[in-house]
Length: 212
Image 1 (cartoon, rainbow, N blue to C red):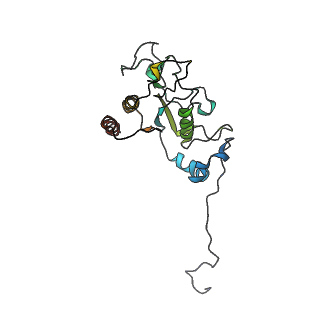
Image 2 (cartoon, one colour):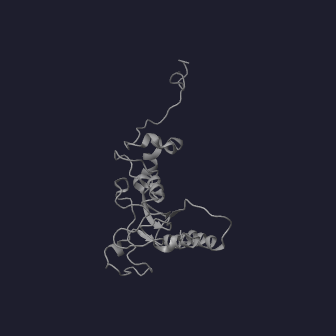
Image 3 (cartoon, rainbow, N blue to C red):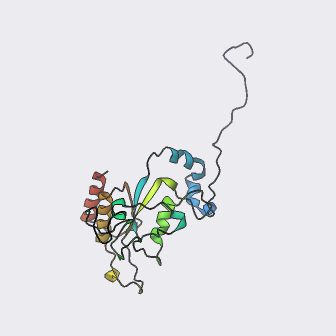
């Protein structure tokens, strides 16, 4: 071996792994989904390769813009935000849709209605986009690279808000998907289901895909 100039030396081979530090989020250790995808090892590398923030439309029960673990993670319609209250400033057919829109119950103003007694939409939004490494709550899979477009289609019958007659029909989700496609969402999340096929749902899904 010493006489062969092509061999520099001999030593045991071994496996190497990336050294990683888990985010500081207080509930991160309870997020089994992160362990499954090895989030602590790869999230910094993956997110560094994403050049632009991705708008994710969450078609669900809405989420609270005041949640500190979603601070800065909500999509904003800047034309409506900087426009006049009660006016469809961007001409998209929806008035004051600053953070998204609610078909289930719409109060308007700077904070669209969300079903605080049914926080499913907020739960989903957190899994996607909760701020990572901020010492509170959980860590979002996409962390600081996702913006949540808030689309509320769920009404669960809270007697304090008797609007919309308890309607939560499939047609509301169809309208929300079209809104998402027309207003810049790149991803649509629907954590819900129904029975059978629906031609209108299939059509709007194809429409959303065609919009990129």
